[in-house]
Length: 493
Image (cartoon, rainbow, N blue to C red; front, side):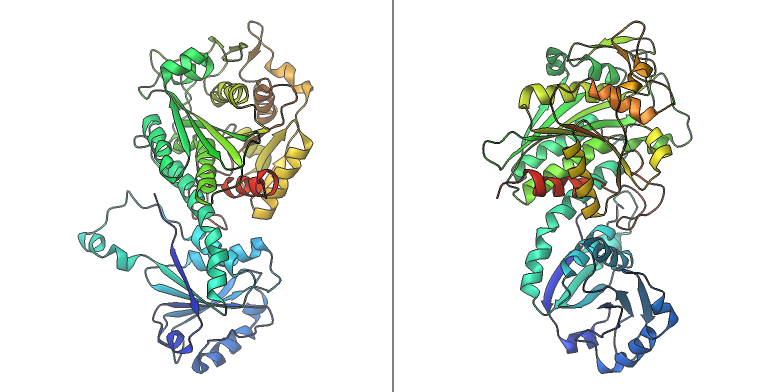
């Protein structure tokens, strides 16, 4: 998998700063106090820059850049505005400003005693992500890749303490990168089998991982899930990942939609943009990234992650509009549109998660509807919940981590839109309130009194442009939010 940039921590050394031939970054307060360690020759140029209108126009986390500063070997000095009272989100944005500029040279960050330096380091790691495994490299590049990989060194007053706090976030960065890699992978590589194998390999870091094949799924009665994948050569699977770090408490269950490619099936999608349907396993990717993070940081919580892995293809064996399938719960579903397939996958996995694990709460994540993009764009995921406290905690965690989320309604009034003439329900209610009727459908597979939330990440998993913390491509949205939720609400002391 893609690894976060290497970040080291050391004491401030003026001579090293003068001789550094890469990039030098200064974390500076709005009052433009110069950090310790800046060589005398460069101070006047920096002071002049901080007296400019350009500096006054900067927002927290933004930067000015001075090329080839006098009296230094550096190729550039980056002046990053960041108050000592900056929020976590502002500090990570400052790190992202640095991370966006990382090249093949070594970057030196003069952090002094900035109280948010650890969050700056996380921002650098997250924005420094690059998925280039399929881009051709010359033999020379391959031969000296270690020398060309970007490196970052923080100079700080207390480097050991900073290394400890920043190191705690390394597990989060790796979980985000794992999710991004999965979402960015092409479907001819990330088949259902390859996906399951990557999750199985996480047993090496302490997870217990179980892979259920089609025969086992049939025995369990997961006919709704199996119907989605019956037109594909890739076998459908359910993968169960368990992290038991919290004693005897009932686990939090995370459930992810893992459609490794979605053509729409017989209700085939338009050709334009279909290549992005490699991201329709985004919910499963987030669940996998969270489970990786929890294992790496040895979380004191019990969490089970379940993902339904299928491929939705048109074929002579594919399910048709008008088919009626029976779910594991026993309810029948009339398939109106085979492109509303993710909810069929989730229906069976949600029921299985509840009946097997008796969880304290259930949260599912899915790139479920285009309607949520119409409602919220690419800045917020849609949150639906039958439990106000769970919804409040999810939104609080998302806000603290700087990941946009907005609660949308559930109401019996929408049930009439998914009422079927022939079966217990139909799998789509049409264009009106499309994300809400999808959530209403999923709620049919939640037991009474079971706290549950559904998060529709269709708009935030693969936005059309770069975000504050990610280059264009997969964002890994949700890994930080759910890790924070576990820390704050499900982790024992």
